[in-house]
Length: 222
Image (cartoon, rainbow, N blue to C red):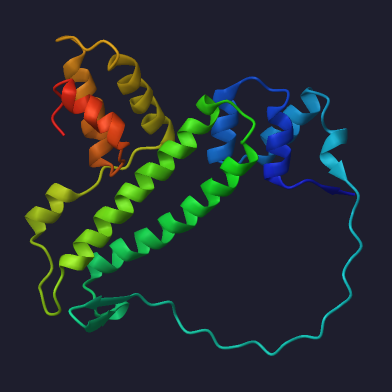
């Protein structure tokens, strides 16, 4: 007997568990042991088992094809620039975009499994997709501005643009604080909203155009 996939188990768990925050955490960061424990707790473990499919007939082994390393090709004014031609700093931005594209595809698949859940349960995933998309656009903008032979950015400028690493819990906490306090902005909480926004911005985490408009209207420096 084979167990269901992690996403299938999580969808099954969401039918009984009303703790949306925990479901979100298990969606963003997989924890198979925790999911199995909760399935057992809610009496869903038997439902999480499906018959083992018959193994497919063996296929003749194909000769492995030599794969060429993945390269980026940027065309500027009719001139093609390969990934290997980019400075190390821009190569890192391209690799970051590659990883972000993969993550966004994964998050989209998880959102499909959460179609019947409340919007509040899906919000962290949609927010993460928007943030990654903003980061991708910013990275491509920097790559597009580069010209062949142009030197790397000055160290001081790099230091100013260096991103601060924060975990998902902190990102989620900052978003919730901003959304909650934007409903009633005062002189007392405005500096704290600014601080939370600045932390997200320094980490390269973007926000929706609607939220950015609300921040600007509240007097937050973007």
